[in-house]
Length: 288
Image (tube, rainbow, N blue to C red):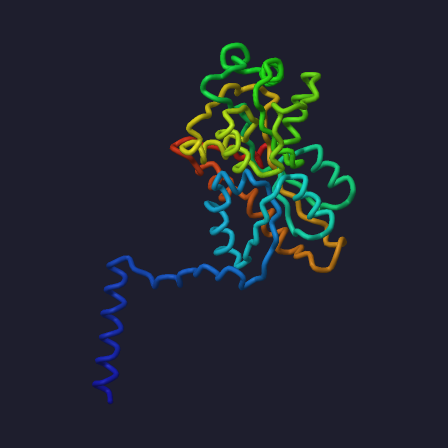
């Protein structure tokens, strides 16, 4: 018995000594990713631009694996996304029409709103550029729209109360023009579908830079004819929907998403998302 105890002591001592010399300590258990849906589900109402740009596909898996919360994405125009929040059919919004966002908050429909990121809008047109926008108004959105209407050249509008459509109408208003006639085509669709129609019709349109960048390879007839006007800035915000609207709203899940998307780690993830080597969204949570 004494020999066995002595032998056991020697083995333990040798092992401890070996670990000490190797600088080894027992490895901490690896943190496992949570299964999406294990902590519930949230409905994210967002714009077609965040979907069509490929951003959501790039960043949402990280949220789901870290939190175990599954994200059901409903990609519509900002107007429809905000309407979903108003009726309690979404838990959290990721949108880009500040005036509509502020009205939503003022009405008490949202609990918190944070800046998330921004990019910009661009005016796209056919390579022949019949309105000569690229020559005469390459950095002036109002002048570009004025030139398009003067020809008139085909212009394709989303006409869906989205953030992009809101910006488009703002530019027409600033130009003192009410667009109407056969040259003004309304799709009532998202950014991707509208770009496809514009490409087919050899027309002009207003698009967010990220969606165009993601679809550029299939838009062989289009190019950027106007960009860089401060009026074309395109900021995005996240809003948690007020749970007082109805009992089905997942308030805790919505807050977890809002906190996650403005966190430094996710802001870096957004900054690292590139299309053909170009950064298409600039994080802005730290600026507020």
